[in-house]
Length: 208
Image (cartoon, rainbow, N blue to C red; front, top):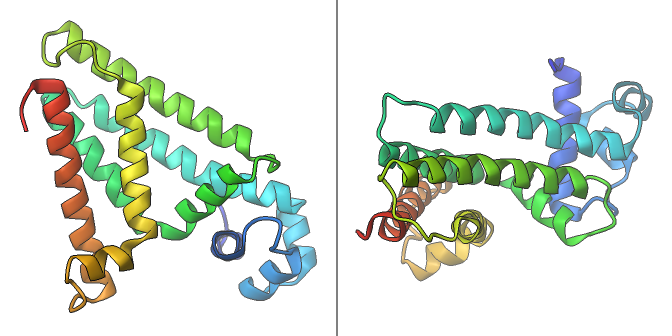
């Protein structure tokens, strides 16, 4: 779905506030004020706060599904190269969109939010795509068998989300206070990606 500038402003403002305060603590009035629009406009475009958060997730999910499928289906690259590309793209996606991913983390903790089922279905679909890719690589002899793919996916998401959400603690522990926010983000993307690629190659190929 294509959004106009007003709709994008509302989505971005809602994403920011949901990340900071949570879904229940954020009102439609708060979102309207942040986006510089009236409340009636939010109702006109999205209907309700529940439909608004659903629209945020759908917008992000559709983009990620396309990226995931395209990355793993690129037969011009080897299985290992596609795996590495997946890790790099996933880590960059998380680190570059902290508000959305903090919002997703909050939503998963609050089980009464209707969008939870959408999150679950998206995670399940993404897992199945990755599992099928690794299974194909195993059948063709590129990856070793008896691998816990669910734990690999959980490690990918858990490690990346943890570093993203606690990046300033990581910065201090790594003596990187001299880096600007943008420099820190790029460092974390590269450092996290390389760590996860080495870990997954050790699991799938017996190499580090």
